[in-house]
Image 1 (cartoon, rainbow, N blue to C red):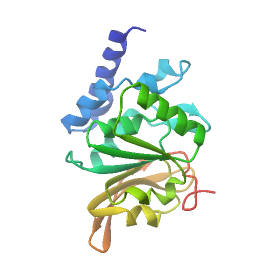
Image 2: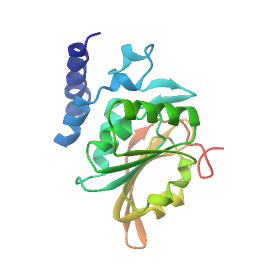
Image 3: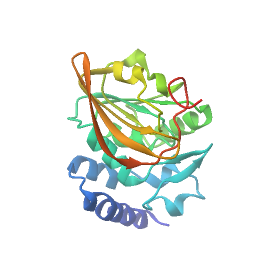
Length: 215
C-alpha cells in the first residue's frame, strides 16, 4: 500500500477509534496521526496496522490497540517537559508516541530480541530521544529516575513497588493490574510519601514478566 493509503488509514484511526471515544489531547491526536504505525510491525502484520485491536508482534507479545495507547498516554497528563519511562518496549510504538510529547523517554524490555528490533526501528525512523534498555521492567529503570510518568504495557498481579518509588512528586503511573485474563487499568499519583489510586476501565494485557510480575 502506498504512503497516501497509510496516511488515510492513520487519519481514520484517529477519528474513528480515538477521538470518537473521548481522547481530547490534541497533541496526542496529532502525534498518532503522524507516526507510521505500520513500520513498527512485520510485513505480514501490516494489513492490521491500523485496526481497532492489538496485533501480535511475536514472542507472545502484542502492540496495543491504538485507543489504549492513546488513553494510557493521555492519563499520564504530560505537559511537554518531562522524562518518562515506558515499561514493555515491545515494537517501540508506545515509546515513539511518547517521544513526540516529551524530551526524554526511557523504555525497557525483558525480551532481548524485541528490544534490539525496536531499537533498530526507532533509530531508522529518526527517534533520537529514546533510550532502549534490556531488563526486568517490573523493577523499572532506577538509573534515570525519578520520572514524571511511567506507563506499563503488560499486566501485573499487583503494582510493583519500584515503579511507584521511581515517580517524582506529582508523577503518574499507568498500569493494568489484575489476574492473567482480566485487569483494571489503574492510575497511581505520587503525592509526597503517599500514592493515590484511581481505576479507569477493564482491560486485557499480556502478563508482565519479572520479579514483581508473573514468573
